[in-house]
Length: 135
Image 1 (tube, helix red, strand yellow):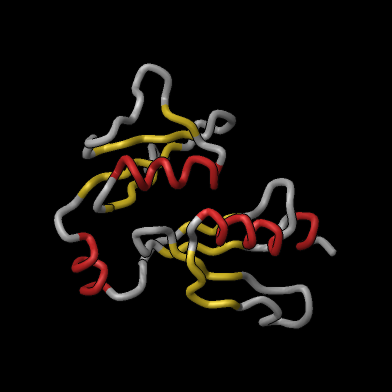
Image 2 (cartoon, helix red, strand yellow):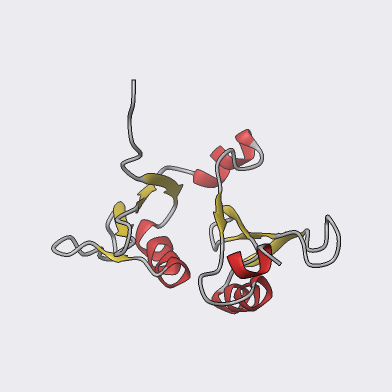
């Protein structure tokens, strides 16, 4: 049995706002011919290079659902394409992400990651860039 991942779904309170928040973070765009609009209950964005899609779906009381489950059971680990981890962290914080836990240096100098949250509290991690990870 073999399947492939069609898209990754993120439950949220405001699909349009959250999809717009994530677009510049990942370099994703709306799908041609299927623009996301204010008030849409489902919004899809995709990576124009790989085709990976994120689907944001409005669900009733997403915050209560998260409290019942505790920590996110699935989260994104981001690796900067053209900056260092710390430069990307600075940009993400300026964009509105919040720090959940700073684990830089966890395994010695120059190691680790930072756990962040998007505007709706969905956690994600910012890792070291590939250049930093190989040194």
